[in-house]
Length: 123
Image (cartoon, rainbow, N blue to C red; front, side):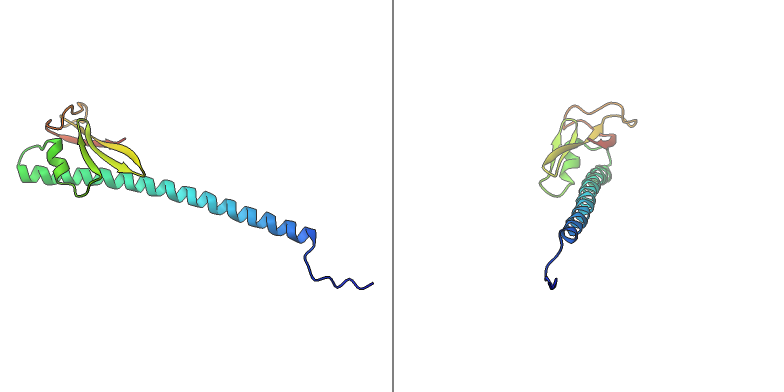
């Protein structure tokens, strides 16, 4: 009897399936970490943009700007002036870059007409 079959054995197929499963798991983990890193970078960029807008408004007005004046320095429709700071939308979620009415970042603003002395973290 001649055993010249032209196919794969069950063991070869199992090994291929296991290897493909391992590769797919690695790719899925890397993609998840990449998405988390991108979100963190977008949050950091939004906070920095608000801080830069604060600095521009401060220079233009020669006085501490209001939340509304800071918002006016930002380009785009993703930023909205809210009583506690500047709200931005990242990955379909709302985040707020907090603003404070004292230079020590301890007294939060309560109105978009409040003068801003400090720009804080993004939440």
